[in-house]
Structures are given as C-alpha cells and as structure tokens.
Length: 377
Ligand code: FE2
Image (cartoon, rainbow, N blue to C red; front, side):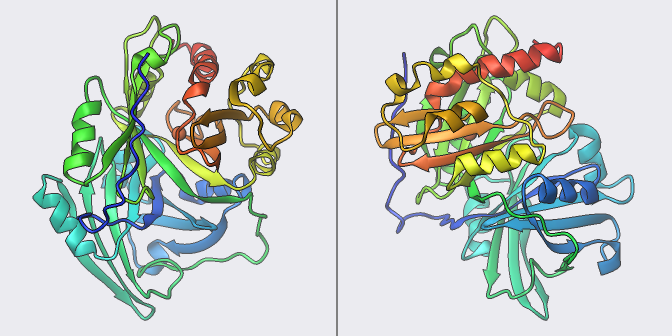
C-alpha cells in the first residue's frame, strides 16, 4: 500500500514566481464549433457569450464562447484546411487545446516560466479594442496542449478583443449549477509522469500534493499511476496520469492511442448541489459511467455519515469518498466525443481536498466494461 503524502499547498505566496488566480477559460479545438457550442448550452447549461470568426475578421477559424458562473469554455473550429487547428482536429479529434490561467502579469508569467525551461508558445502580446486591453502569453505543456497566461486590465468587453457579443434571445437553456474548474487531468506516455511532475515543479512552481502508484489500483483493473500537482494557493490543480502494466490494457493507453498522444483526459467541474446538477445533466442527455448498485451496500460503513440521502445518490450513481478533511461526491461522464478520449467529472466537495481514491476500483471496473465494449481491453 502506498498512499500518498498529503502535503498542503504552500501558503508562502510571497515567493510564488507564478501567482495564479484560477482558470480563466478552457479552449477546445473541435470539428464543428457551432454544434459543440449548442451541445454545451443544451446539455451542460452554458450561456452564449461571445463569437469570433470570418464575420469579425478572423479568416481561418470560428470560436464560440459560452459561460456558466465562473466557467468559460471556448469552442474553436477551422473554417479552412491546412491550418494548425485543422491539423490538430485531424490528429486528435475534439480535445482541449488551451488551459488558460488567470494572472496579474502575463509578461512576468512568460519570463519566469521560459527562463526556467518552459517552451514558449506565445510571447507576451497586448490585445486592445474599445472595451479595454488584455495581455496574453503562453507556454507549451504535455502533447499539443498549451497554458496561456491571461491578464485582464479592467477589460469590459464580453470576452476578449477580437470577439463580439453573441446572444440568442430565443434560446437560453437554464444553467445546471456548474461553478468553476476544480482540476484538469493530463494523460502522459509511459515513464513520462515524473518528467512532467518536474516540469510543473521547476517551470511553474507547483508542488506534488498527492501521489497514487499502481499498487493503489488493483492490477485486475486498468492500471495507472497519478501525481497531483497544485499551484501555491491551491486554485489550480493538475493531476498527471501515466499508464501502468496490468493484466489488461490501461485506460490511459487507450486514451493515448485514440488521442494520438498526450493530452487532457478530464476536466472536473464543481457544483454546490451534485444531486440537482447530475439530474439536470442526465435529463439533457449527458451520459455517465454507472457503478453497480452493490457499491451502495456498504457505503456508509466506508465513508461514515453524510448529509445527503442515500436514495438519490444510488438512483443517479453518484460516488462518495472521504479523506481526513471531509468527503466529496463525484461522477464521471462518458467520453463526450466518439473517440474514447476527453470526459468530464462533476464534483462537490464537502471539506475533502482529495480526488476520490476510494472510488478508483469501482470506477475502473466501470471504465473497463466500457473499454471491453469498444474492443480495446
Ligand atoms: Fe478528477
């Protein structure tokens, strides 16, 4: 057995060379952004916010921005072949391209990270329109994924210079209670977890707050190893997974094969009322992994007393786990595109700062059943 060290994120923010205020937005490169935006609005309860494309002077792409509380998603598609976005979609299918982080100083974020070995994606760039200015810079991380640093100087437009407001008075689906990005998980190749842990430590000043090795996850199930990286104030958490040898093919390996490389495996979205959120999402067609009902037989023995009624949790298949600070409720969607790659986690934290280790076994059995159905086990 080998659970992890539960190191607290550092409170020493004086010496944080990369202060982050949270996730600014997540941008997906997709095959059809118009329809993807509709899916996130209809199924997940986002609202239309902004648009950029040929009509606004951007010739090679169309981007739709949707928002729900503090969550902002950008759906971008190429409108011509032979550009970087088209190549990305051809190779990876739909997936996360940018994890954009909120900073006070995009120039300093770029200087501090590139001087520590980060590979530049974009030098600090000032973007301006009548609504104000935004500074942006960026560095590459695993695979073709990029971290952008976004500095908003009292920007009053809908999203960013270059985007115009986008609304549809005839179509405004109710929100589903999704609040903010809790964490974003990356899948990396064999033996690549530690090099990427080192990248987050050295280049971005993150700390490894939790580790799981393959012993934590029975080798009968899709094996993987994982380390959770957190920035200084704990607002930004990036667990990194790599495949491990098991009796069957690791779920991380299946991802790497279908994504054609390393990339974002799941984005965890926080809610304050998981029963209501999951009920809404399910009724709008979002599909979730299902654990056997026997999971609930000894749940109270495992996690102790919880505030929620057991019946709705069981009915909706919501998972519960406890650590020494509290408990959490979580549920994982099925992949949201035809390749078995990106999915979402819905999470409600009641004190717990961990990631649901106690659910790995039940969960991996569920994932393994799905993998077997696809013929990839
Ligand atoms: Fe997660």
